[in-house]
Image 1 (cartoon, helix red, strand yellow):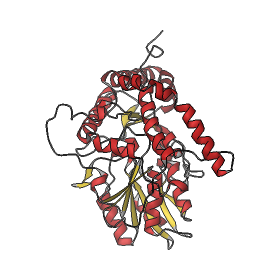
Image 2 (image 1 turned 135 degrees about the horizontal axis):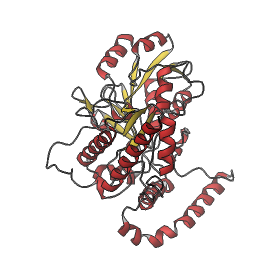
Image 3 (image 1 turned 90 degrees about the horizontal axis):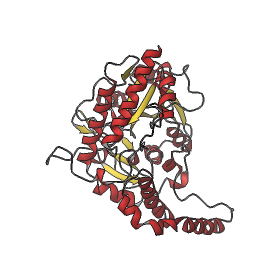
Length: 408
């Protein structure tokens, strides 16, 4: 049995609950708390980034007949909130490094254009100062998409400060089952009144977070203590769902949590005005942002070092600037299918952002978007990765890239 098929650790693709997010920053004593999107302005904690997009567009006054500019390099979950407002998405081009193509944006602005979404991909801010000036000169509202970019700063300001509104996905950076944020540095959010998601949602958010942690071997003492109550959980869920189903009279009760929590792309309007769960907000409050940022940068650089000098690949971004806290490590590959197939078979967790895009968005819309969707494979670098897990993943990545070079 070779190294590719040997026993391997099961790595979480996103943060899972453990002590890792709550201790002090490794190798550091004291220091200021790293800036985050929550420092940009008024905040409302919601259940997902896509819900925050819907709220932002509603606050912008986007309505039937309007157009919203959306990057051609995108997650399909970004589009349904635009349609929910009655607006039409218009897709603009990006450069080969995923930067906004402002010349193409300018060509697509029409009388119905009300806003533009700009995404800070993989945690790396766009040229936000330039984009802000561009929008101001044209009376265009800017929605700063920080779904990949919860922590960090640009030109001395926290990410999220440049948009009329900004959105974030807290569950990409914290060990929680759900969570997002709507932020505004320019407008008050008094009109955004959120309601609790209900007892079932609150229980689901807490228990699913714990279950995910246990599945990856974290918190063994807690798992032992909760063995009996967790064993009774399925019975409780079935009873609760049956009660909800009977109350609705539909024969199928509504889901206890939004589809976004389970990696679905659906947009569910009933979650638009719901607050993030208490458990998720408590985890965020107690977590060490310094440790999260330090470890994410350290893990990113370890993966960068593992691939340095190897043919057939390069990081999507040439450097990791100070102030950037990555979501993942995006690698641009000459033969992505070979690498993906080998690493997927080995059990390495992978993300191919925008590999599925909104129907009709293809190379004719934006050649660079299609190239990035095909050739970029991203690897987790979150704070919950243990040293042996990170080393194993880096070793598998290097081994596959060397095998690719030999095969070529």
